[in-house]
Length: 295
Image 1 (cartoon, rainbow, N blue to C red):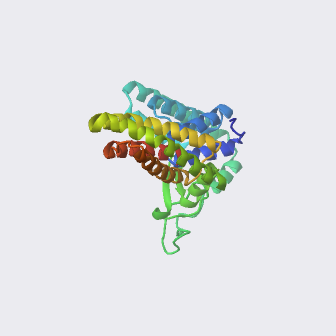
Image 2: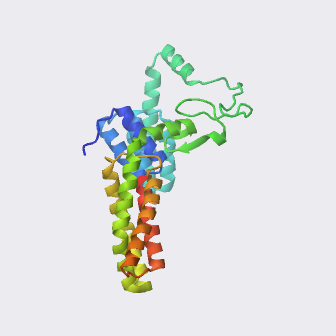
Image 3: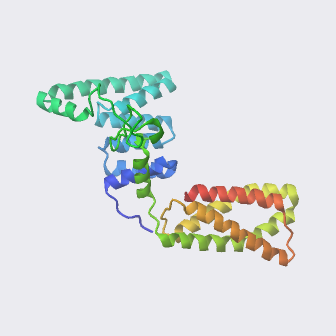
């Protein structure tokens, strides 16, 4: 199925939501789409830097973000952390990039008119240093934290450090809602498909694991569990057009357990032996894979 065309802001929102949910692979894919579509967007490069695993690629992404926005504090801080982790040669390259950015930032600052600089500074100052602010959710709690998306003051209990900075829980949930685009009927489809797959597969899996005995049955369960779980998750996702739901993983897991129970009962009528430990190992690994894929 062809993916829907998203605006750049929608693409960045979905990528940030995926990162917030811990889906690094999906976040990386979406941030790469964003950088390909808009190579001059520093936020896209910052997001991609947080999503990729390679330190060299992280450094390259942060350097690109710094070239686009030489005054970017987040990219500078990240590069300094990477310099401390890398080799002396990498540290030298990073320091050169930081020095170049500092020169560019100074040049941009000098070329800006005083009036526009004053206006920008005023717009970036959320409040006076002496002003006391309180958490929007806990009016009696003083705080110095603000959500970097909605700028509302929030206390430590109402904020979370994400890959894109401190966000209040309301903004995180709002971004996740963009990522979760499943319709109500999708949950019924997931339940039916999961139940049927499990009911059909259970007798076959039980027969295989039972024939091999306890030791070899456990080994086969360890091998088959993640593989079968991955295939099942792919089928389930395709059945709902790859849409995502907040509770889709839970619905799939419960339906599969019920389907497995039915399949095991049916297999028992045909005299198929029940291997409890191998089945339990297989089920745990398969369900873990399915839940991680669909959540």
